[in-house]
Amino acid sequence: MLRALGGFSALLLLGAQPAAAGSISADSIIDQDSALQEATQQVPQGAKVTGSRCQQIVMPGDSFRYRCSVEYSTSPPATTLTP
Image (cartoon, rainbow, N blue to C red):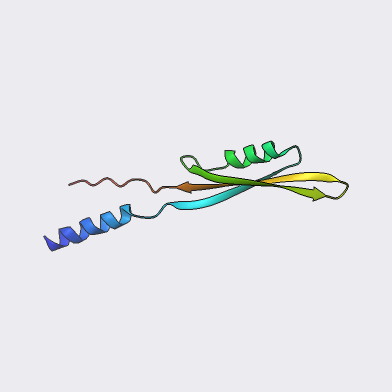
């Protein structure tokens, strides 16, 4: 009985793992929207976008580059308990 409870406790702890977070960055020489769209398309499937930020980078010759980062979080897959 005690061994079964220990295994059940381990399964509960595995299910309580924190969500993972990450970010993706992308650059564009066209415009800020293109950089943001490119970064958003690289977010892992099933992840939730939690924020974004963009910056304009001045390049030599008075040209610009746009860099956008998209933050995301993923939840671990739900564990199913089988009796």
